[in-house]
Image (cartoon, rainbow, N blue to C red; front, side):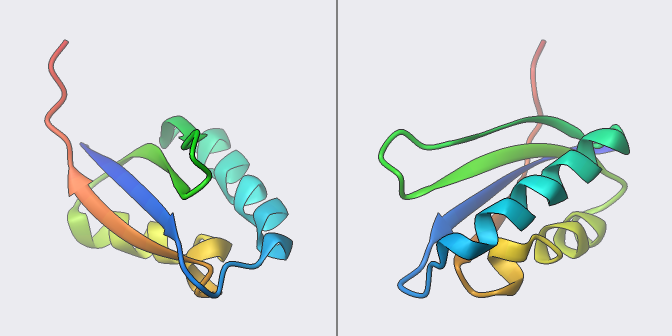
Length: 85
């Protein structure tokens, strides 16, 4: 498994109605033990979450299933994160 930083930045099309679905999406990832941490940015421009996935392609598939991303409310940037402990 690899660790990925998922950055979601609000777009001009941001719609608050998709936020509840976004948190349900994160709850599912947490139940699957993929989600390691998450949270919004203090300036309300978006947020980030950290997941584990087998590949960048799998991380992208997961990230594009996020209702905020799928609806166009947020843009997704994915970075493989080589965390140091």
